[in-house]
Length: 137
Image (cartoon, rainbow, N blue to C red; front, top):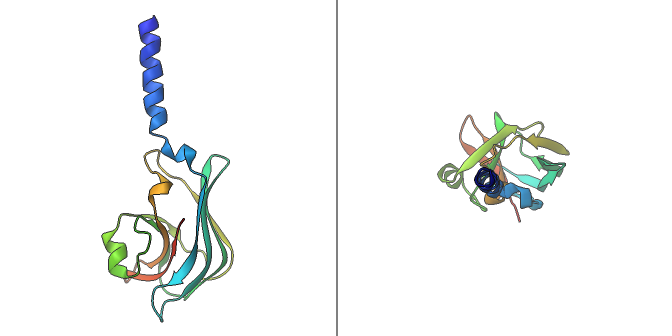
């Protein structure tokens, strides 16, 4: 019976070690323009609240456009559309509005570690164009 308990403990510890997001608290960054025609401003914060991950925008503005999405991108400074396309990314949601405070509840899979993402991106999915990004620190 002791052998069985040791195996369960090892499996439980192994599963726990996969939960690296448990140590995650928050990352914040200010939105930056992609170019003169695609501008963004405001603050993005990725945080863990009550065991769930939440992305909030404060004093947010982005140039209005078609088919805009919010994405997490591993590249911390994706200054071009090509840089976004070449980086690992995670599509979160359709952008709620081009301005104002916003909150997005993230339903991340167990194997996704939010600390691995370096930026939040506002992305035009229809034309594959970067509108703005916020480097997360």
